Length: 218
Image (cartoon, rainbow, N blue to C red; front, side, top):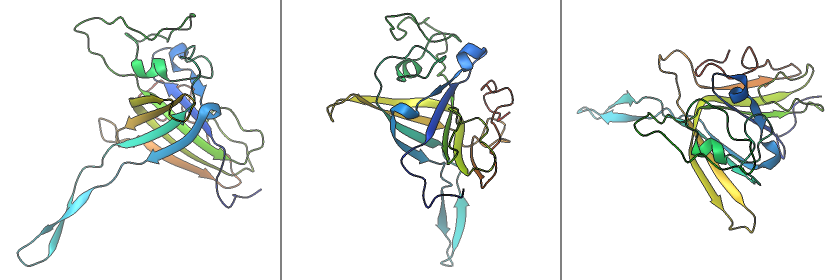
């Protein structure tokens, strides 16, 4: 096989929550309910400062944050991270404490919070994989097969900043936006990456298969 003229129609989308246990870290596949993917990589802004001689001195600004927007067709509030989720309702609303999402029917998003406690938003790793592997893994973070062609985008330390649900098209649709910083706190790790393999397997991300280190790809 060889790279196609264009990647089109299908992709594998995986979202993993950062947490202290494998139940919380478990990945979920969203490609079956995703229609549109928009990736806005962090811009490198700057501007030319005019000098009295009529020249310009380039002033570089810090790299901005990036965003990933997915258009989803959810059908329930999901049963938690341990299965292929059917919506991001619980992930957006959040949950008090480092605990797993509710899987007890009927499912209700968390409404009980402790006053005065820092309400830190959940962090996620988002992976998007295009491949001509005829038997691809269901996990965008997993390794691809040898002698196949693939392109993958991934970002870590993502937070859901927007979750808009509409019925405008006669079907329930939710537009979800993840936002991620360009770099980690210490400034030594880029928080997004591209991988490409021509007739070569892509390596798996996260050494133990789980997103257990907020700002590390291993």
